[in-house]
Length: 398
Image (tube, rainbow, N blue to C red; front, side, top):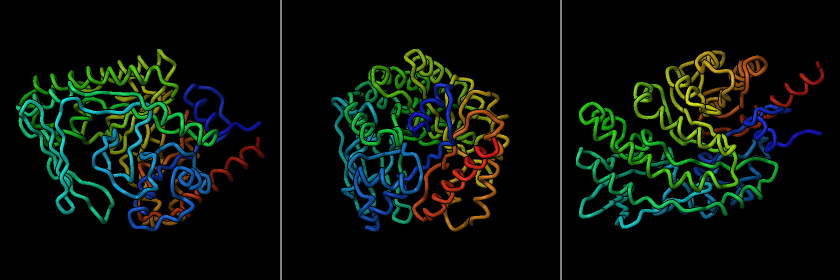
């Protein structure tokens, strides 16, 4: 009897037998952009519609960033572990986050949203601009800009309050059934939190060289705060988790040994002790970072973007990982699903993936990273159909 998508996914992470290639494509960005434009077909609205979209395209549902996205209204007040502009209430898996005794205000000025966080009279100010062409926010001012503000940031982080949202996870898990597994995010690791959410890359680099002790204190502070989230995570029913860290070799490979490696090793040890697994999101350049992530005990490296968009070819990924066990998840750059590419390009990419799938250890076929707003979803369905054809041919030949 054939295994379901869900069972194949779980089995792959457990190192058990699977019976098909998993094709996982992140449709959230495309779907949200259609909502903002008022163009999403009604059949794909809401939680049920989001599942139907995946089923119609032959894609295993995994990524989901909002649990009431059909409303079409963007909220700037909810705190999301993904830190993206989404439609509706952010979905954070098994935990939520709020700040205790931190005064937070959001003010919209045209296309700019200004957020102020105040604690004990000290303030951090952030500005993000809504980009209507790409349907997302871009930072124009990060909250932390001075060494003094690192201390203010620590004051805020010490007031993190994590709480269980396991009911959200269980609702989606039951809704999707055997079709897929809803994402169960982990809190951003300290280094990535500083780069992505608080300082930006440029300020982070300067701070590491100019004020290394202050950076280390802040890294340790975020680490301690995340302990409370992991207490919830480790007791939850979710089995596979996701480090939403947006790693790229060009940004953080040289910083990883000092600011991330030990954190990952510790957290993977905790997860594994409870029988849980996790993937790490590497959605930039790969050479120089993949093997470092694999060395921490990571179960999967996800959103891997190879040539013709990324810096490595598909058949170079396993050598770069230097690890036969880690699941390599990706292979299909999101840009390839736009009309900048054609079906011939998709055929070549699939051919390179299938050649590796037969000989190079555990792989998941995945879009890397998201399917963009201007994508042609017929391309997504085309990959689904071609993967199915390849599997039929393999079975007939065996």
